[in-house]
Structures are given as C-alpha cells and as structure tokens.
Length: 82
Picture 1 (spheres, rainbow, N blue to C red):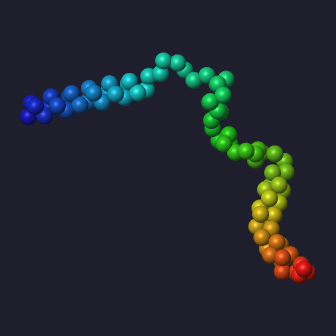
Picture 2 (tube, rainbow, N blue to C red):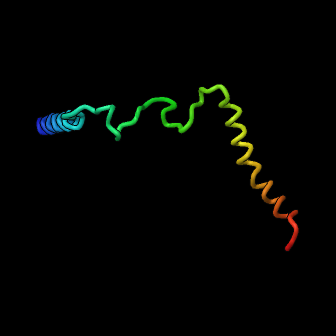
Picture 3 (tube, rainbow, N blue to C red):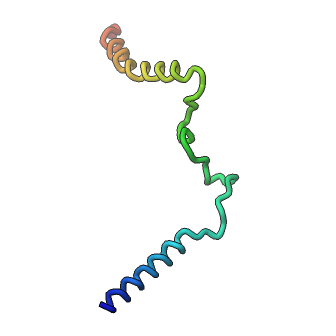
C-alpha cells in the first residue's frame, strides 16, 4: 500500500517535471522570422475570400476545372483525322 502511493507520487513528480520542461522555451518566437507565419482563420489560404468578386472567380475556376475534360474530349472526337 505504501509502495503504491510512493510509486504514484514519484510518477506524478516526473510527469510534472517532464511537462514543465517541455513547455519551457528560452527564446520567444519572433514574428519577423522567415520560419514563423501568421496563424488563424484564412491565413492558410492562397487567396482572399473576403474580396468583392471572390464568388465569381471561385465558380469560374470550378466551372473551368469541371468542364475542361469534357471540352477536350469533344474536341479530340470532332477534330479532322490527319
């Protein structure tokens, strides 16, 4: 009984020391560093969804990407044989 409580206390001490050691950083992250990018919503997108014509450009892109294979297939079928 005493051995179990002593082992549990020792494991909690080591766990606490591991967690506190892992969270410690000697230097804080510099935002001017080229290896740290801004974080948060919409920062991982290569475009700005808040612009005025975003919906038009998005649907034009999706329309082109979806129907291009069909247009290419029709063109290949209808082109004159050489």
